[in-house]
Length: 193
Image (cartoon, rainbow, N blue to C red; front, side):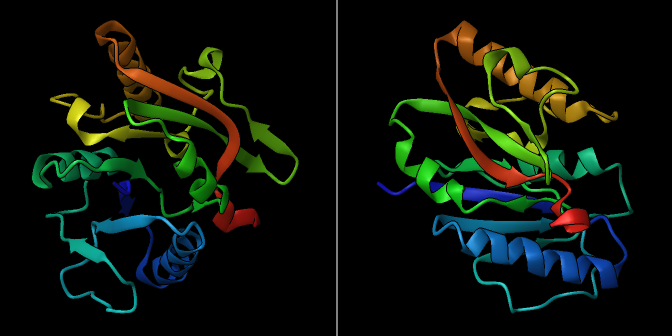
């Protein structure tokens, strides 16, 4: 069975900037050749476009802490066997994602990957780097079924704590994790790519 990815992107910029950045995000998703549904969270109620295929817009009341948007997705969208991947609106997916998708073993519940951090720097995926300030949201992907009731803390670096806890839970409960050295995303790509 083909892996299904729910790609979750938070709409956090002004509208003009966000549209350009969402175009870039979408183009990076398409280049991966994966089976996906894209969830854009936090769009204003008046805003909608049909130019993105397989996309659901989720309106969020008020302008929340951006971690709330991920939690809102987790609370609202049911488990359909999907992988959950958070793609911030300033990041982009790397075409390697499609190749990594083919390497995921059937019983894997979480995988960690490397990330192009800047033109000259890479965050290398390793077990030692699964810690706050050494891992980014776009370096991990997790099966929805094992997230359970865990939610993002509404603090800066909350993604790092979330990833650390998910990795710890996987090890404690005997869930398989894979770590791939391949680059899967570009960090803050909208600024330098």
